[in-house]
Image 1: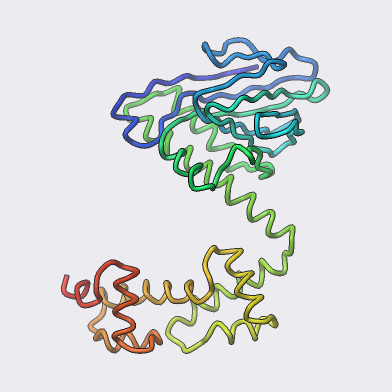
Image 2: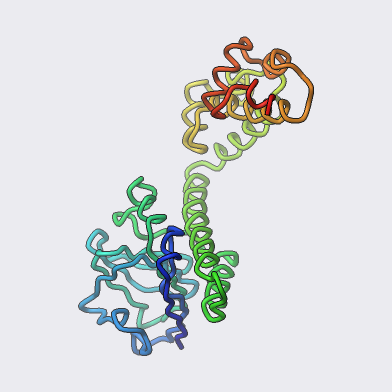
Length: 290
């Protein structure tokens, strides 16, 4: 069984940064012929010859298994809960296993929104498979995308673009968190507790060194683990949260800039003002006056 929708995008839609070309779902029973018929021109392909598309696709295997191969990826078994990405201009082929078949969703799209992520190295043809496991939230997003494509109401491309971005974010985040927990779940718990302590002590003189000591690890090791999990050093994480808090205090209280600086444990009002402007884009006095 296969159901699919193919969509058009206006020049105005393309300025949004991402447009969706196709959405679909297929159930392939064991020993059933594959690929199924009914695909639009350019999408049907011979599994032995493969194909090249001029768009991205996110395909999500929710049951069964199969194989995938591309220019950048040797033949790899796809398991239940795997998302694999097709890249524009990249030769690829895939198919469900003859013994098990599969159930698989897909969504195709193109645009600078995704191109920028590839250029920044977040997503790459050299890593097209993401092991996220089965997620009802991800399946719901695919279903919502298909329903939106069928209805094709006004501005549906903008809604579909949002769904694609949500899918990409979940895919990227889920796999990275699974990897981190697999490596050492104790580290994940430690960093979560450390982040909570930093958030709860923005107006106290608590130092990152004290947190590391309380967690029973050296400062250098704590800093390395914290940055691996969050993308920020613990000192920058703490400082940025204090600057966010300062912005709230400037907007919602009559405290002076000097009082806010010392309340949030900055070395001096001048140091606070310099960091605030670098992060927020304007001086504390400019925000207060506005």
